[in-house]
Image: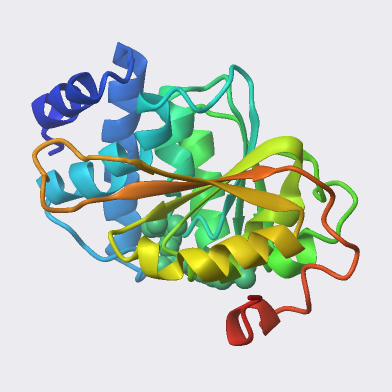
Length: 239
Ligand code: SAM
């Protein structure tokens, strides 16, 4: 059973608003994750408290920072089992969320979970490099979010092409982000972005984690040659 008190006190410590429906949906989402995990390898199996901290509260970081405008159109690039997109949508059902992943079994899981939670969102089974060349998705989002998908320079190429000018890319990073910063700034520049910087994203009761959000503004258009073909951003990061 999910430890509701831990989730609620964590959200309160972060200053993130929630309602009863959100807490019920988190509980239901955890149960659906367990159900799927019993028959397929969906996420690392964590104990309930760690799942709340590592997945739910960590994913909510941009809400603590007031980074997501009402009804913002967001794409979660490499969402896996729905992080950070699902906790963000549970807490803010006004968001227009698209969940993207290259692995179809994760997309099928998310479609089932969304239906059972009574949430609406778009799902997309594709490589980010291919989806960002589709007219419906290229430079169509206010925000691209991504967690645990690639190095910062690679992530620029996987996220910035989705973001409209004036929008923002938000990546979840650890303390090692500073070592990636020079390459990330160069890659962002090539792709029409400007790194704004990192903001601390502390998870309550986990002072040793030192999580941050890397924030990049979309200040120009992404040149047509980007993203390069699937796999190249990973193999040969820009910079
Ligand atoms: N974001 C989730 C989280 O934080 O728990 C999942 C992280 S998991 C380590 C990385 C996910 O990114 C996988 O589900 C993988 O299929 C997806 N992924 C990696 N590269 C991708 C790409 N180029 N396009 C789409 N999905 C990608």
